[in-house]
Length: 475
Image 1: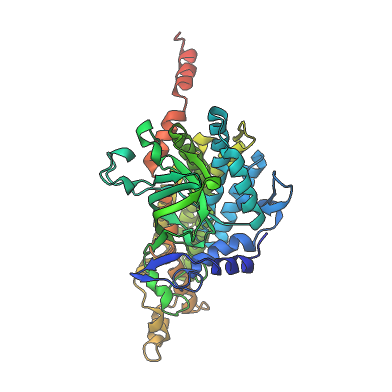
Image 2 (image 1 turned 30 degrees about the horizontal axis):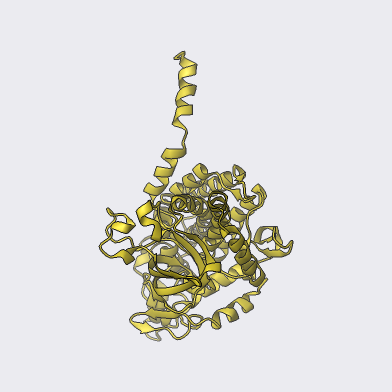
């Protein structure tokens, strides 16, 4: 397994074509806006020890990073949830490696299913690729969300055929793909990209039913960095205006401009009837992964409790009630993630799959609870969370003494500590960290309606009606 330092050095060897603010980025690792997200991914290597963060490969029997593992038991699924909460708390940010893990597990199931129907060799290709990922301890980015164009039209109906990633050419050596994937979490910190279709397909959409894995700096791939609230604060050289001093996340628009993929890295090609199953498998695994938001919630609750103490209101009954409510809501997320792991089951290929209904319920809670936690944290913190002067004002030789004096809370706690904690709350709920915590809670792994659709399909209303009718004597 790679160390944190070895991971960072491995990123330096990659040469992706990256743009930010209309300019080419020379070094992903050294750019001050991107580096916190590198640090967050690096934490998945730094902490890789023990049964929670590591596992035994079913291919080789070697000890591997859990992010490269194919789940072999319910215990694996449970440890995945525990790992994600722990990392969410440790980084207070998106650590960006979950989607790749979830893509690997989904493909382990679906490639096997395609082979069983069509006599193809996708699963053999996939297992060979998986061995390479485990041996080199690679971080994989999962590319699912297409640009989609006119949402009322299917992929093959779009006026611009490139609104969905698709195959434009094939020969004996491989395929050529064109299109874009949006909202790609941590993709600049990934060694490889695993692409998958974004929706169910019909026969006329067959060219869009494609899945593959390629190095992230493959020729023809371009990255356009997504802006975040307060992102240029990272370039100011301060020590606390960013809130979270060490970690962050990022998203990119990824352009595939006639990118070549060799056949040995292709895991689905034109098997359109399996696109929906791949999307559903990945989505369920990834919705379980939102145990990470319970970890970030731990940080926000800790910040809310601390600022209450700094403000001198921690013993007020209504504040204590709010903190209790925050804990109750936050633990609900984790309970649901654990439930879908404990209720998971073995697929025909040997991979363990989460309980899909409970995974969708996990994620639907995540679309609501973090917003409520943010509101409660704002109530406790007070208005200073959005009205404080900058760190430069605090450091200024003339006016700094006034900033420190009038932002003082309880005696014995330096004003700087209070400012730092308020900035962390701001970051998590409105600033840099909010991109990882709030909008990602809403739209990551699918928006609320996507979860409601799956819950509606899987809730077994027929069985519930039968139970009710039996008890009141209706045949």
